[in-house]
Figure 1 (tube, rainbow over the protein chains, first blue to last red):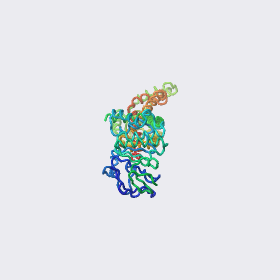
Figure 2 (figure 1 turned 30 degrees about the vertical axis):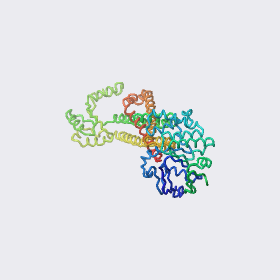
Figure 3 (figure 1 turned 180 degrees about the vertical axis):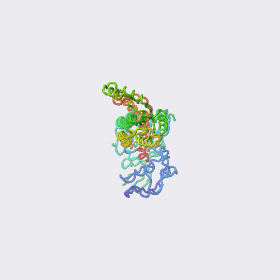
Figure 4 (figure 1 turned 60 degrees about the horizontal axis):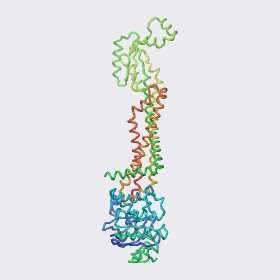
Length: 226
Length: 303
């Protein structure tokens, strides 16, 4: 489904983020990208989202070379991807309901579908009673759950979760992981980038470990070893 | 399509309301710009009126010798009126000049007594000539001095006595026009830059939101449209407030200004030019906000 072929990414001032990275992710997989801060995890996700371009190599999404997609066609790619950001990236001037509904509006869903699905999904993530709150009125855990609701409301092919538990306490972290697993069980590919050892070890899913910008380990039912 | 427009309008209005502080700041800045342009428009019209009034007061009179016949003067009048520089020409016979003098000075016994002493009509027939522009009087004077009927004219033509006044008027109107255009350009540029940068700052403030919208798959126009409509709403409100303010100013000041500028009614002027003024204001308000938003957003849509 997603393949990285000899990807190297160098940021300005010769900052090496990824060095000759290659791997493939299959449909419906749950893959964790493990590594210390600065190992290149976020860059990897940004390349899938076409937020960054590789310096060398190619990233494919369903056999389509992401770097060859025209800027004007990027929204089509991004509508197939749901993203859970560490810093949530909720729209501050929209309510929780509007933030989640926005993605459905973007893909052109009709009003009936929106008014039916948004409350359903908010119930699933436990925010049914916070629909009319603004992001600033939510706790960190609630914000992250709102982000997850936004990421999978339109049933994307893949969900990218970039350190989704980075700002959360253990209880909320476990809740987020539980939600991601549930989404994966429903058939959505999940790529989780994290440096949280407990979470990765508890998942018993595929783990790709990055160190010094390179893939040093890629194991089915892997563990966090650094 | 209808659903799309409905969503865009709803998002624009909600954003406008929820960022009311920013929206009011934008309206205020647009209001200042539109008011400035409206004031310059009014100022220009008032100064044009004043200049026209002053110019209307200037003319030259060509006096014909006592023995000139009516036919000779008519022929001269016909010839002069053919000149493109001539705006208006009026024949004043000896009798008319006498009558005018009597009317004007009837309350002055000394002058009346002097006139009676003379016994006969001392006034000469004349042609009062008005040129299109003050600087054309010299050409007219030259023409008259070298014309076929130069021998009928009393020399020198009174242009030379009035020359310093005409020259001064000519230079004043030219300075007013040039300075007016110069000051207008500077003020309009400054106010445009201020409005442009205010809108840019407002959008800079929302750059994070714009990039989030891009990352969740919104197309550029789906992102741009609510910002543009928000700008249009601000421009529209700014125009409405300006129109209302200027209506009140013109309505309140109109009668008072007529004391200083007889014949110039600001109220009438406002109503006669209402649609022109309103169009200028609306175009400025909307144009400025749309243009600024489009330019400011370009960078943040590159994600």
